[in-house]
Figure 1 (cartoon, helix red, strand yellow):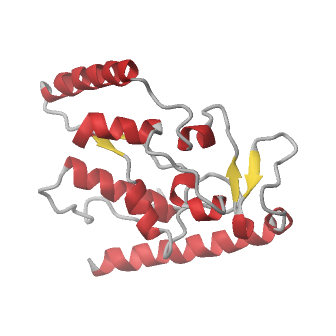
Figure 2 (tube, one colour):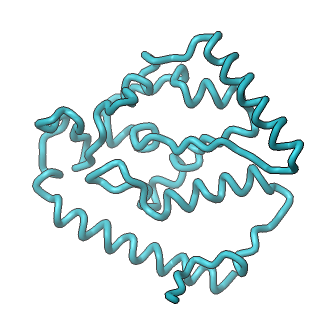
Length: 193
């Protein structure tokens, strides 16, 4: 694991450097007052220079507030389709987990709002409750890691390497809980051909 730790540390160092360059490039945007909405209405400034997608086509912030909660009928239909998929894949000996990457606002809620507006009636949490172990929504894991890792960039909704890494580990833990992941088979370096 020594090589893995060195590779990961190298990636994290590069990630922090890129985050710093991103900060320098977008500094004027970071200095916008709290709750400033972009000209096109797609972004909003949070606290401490963080920018967030305001709604987007998915209505993210309304989902987080519980305004787009799924009905019992929608949940039942989704669960039925999900079970059919799991049965079809199990018949072929295929491991499967549906992954929903947590919204930036749900992980960094205190950077987005002075008073967080998060509801348990948001679709990802509702689906997690009814779909069980074949549904991975690692919002708690990312929330716990947020204080010590660059999970998302400040200037957009894209995820940094550390965020992807923790989601990857959550998926591995779900799909192969009895196995230690062999990092000798999947290295964290890129080989140029």
